[in-house]
Length: 555
Ligand code: TEU
Ligand code: CA
Image (cartoon, rainbow, N blue to C red; front, side, top):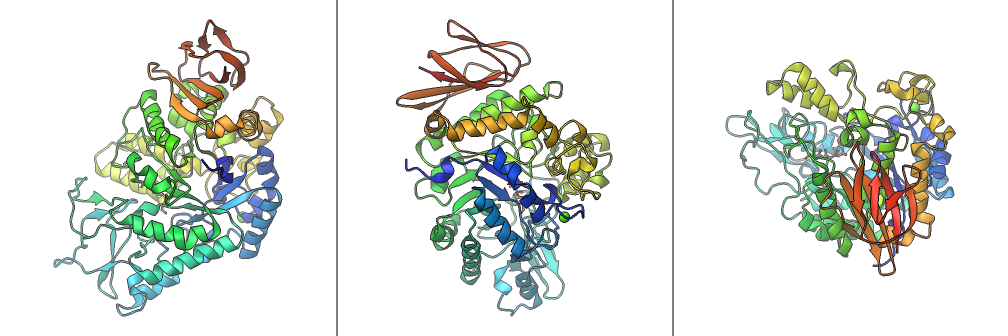
């Protein structure tokens, strides 16, 4: 396989609103990111993906863009954005912007024109349909954030389509003129010197051919809108050829609905993207409906299966985006580790287990210091529009209030959106003003300043993992080795091998609070790293202490 720079890289995701407030108004911003570039460079990461900072009414915290070529004033200005790109480059850090082109804001000039008149030249840039005869929406599709996918516009007496909130009208990708405009905008950003994009919800761009009623999946007769409809490939190919490829961009596609079998088409040699954000391994705790209160129990076995299925394809073709957390997911400690066992050891286990898979590791802000979920006192303290919708839907289904609150807040996207905890100062040192979202009150125990002072901290552990992956004698096998799950008979252990013709490493982790034993196939030449001191190994039998993770070189 050819060697591509981003296969060696580690990416750090910034949720700008919550990262660092540079001007004391309670909202994170570009100056704040610039002030923390040394921190990021110190960690050893190569790329930052910045969630949207474009002009926006912030209905969905910037995933509703009103102007693709301007920066929201609360985040800064285009001059600052250009300065950030330059300053980051000076420190060897590349930038990925978040590209949200399934939809725009309803306050985007294009939409304002589009809705002004049925004859407007931009009418067809969005998706407009007549009501049914009785005046109801064209069909029964339900939006990801609740309610109908269709919102009625009085003035022109038609409905417009939105996969997410009604302030996020879907762009009509069938319109060639619109597509051309989008590609031009993409090229403009690449021209500014960014390395590429994280591409938001991109599998939603192709709509069902006929907007007919579909079989309901909820009592109110609605069915949730489905991504990855037939025919999407043509758009994705064109997007790649006319925009991304022109600048050899790194593209990380958020692609719900893509099956394992389709991975080669999306990320293989002539695939549409560099890598893909998959969902199976992080959504094990909820069923397919996407309803956070429809929880299901899962076992380590399921996690191993989800990861292995994807890795086995990536062994042959393409590349993975490796992650445990992002701005849509709860914190990984809460999701993967039982409450009584959450701590430094188990956080290091999680880090070790995903970091050496085949792909590019992504770290979400705060993950490197072990930030955890938040639990506010009332639903009114939550900001995320999806949290509110999920809570109301749970109540409608008759789930008792307390239970609904618990289930929904366990999964709330605000769990990962609380302000980054920099120090034990007020608001975790994020801002001198009251932050837009209340800080998690454990910032007195979990913060960057303390982590930097403690050589045993999770932060330094991450720094070591990054260094091992990028700059050690084992780098080549960590990046290019073939993945194999070698723990099928071990319900409490995940162990995988990474192998090249002349070299093999094995990563073994226990998800148990008691001692576990693992029989090694090869002979150990060296312990590369781990979350405990020493190694309990005799006659090829490895004793793993509670939540122990080890990375071993085999001969
Ligand atoms: O997320 C897309 C998204 O909502 C999916 O992950 C969704 O949960 C899944 O398809 C359910 O089937 C992206 C962003 O990451 C998110 O923050 C935005 O709110 C959303 O797009 C809309 O732009
Ligand atoms: Ca600010």
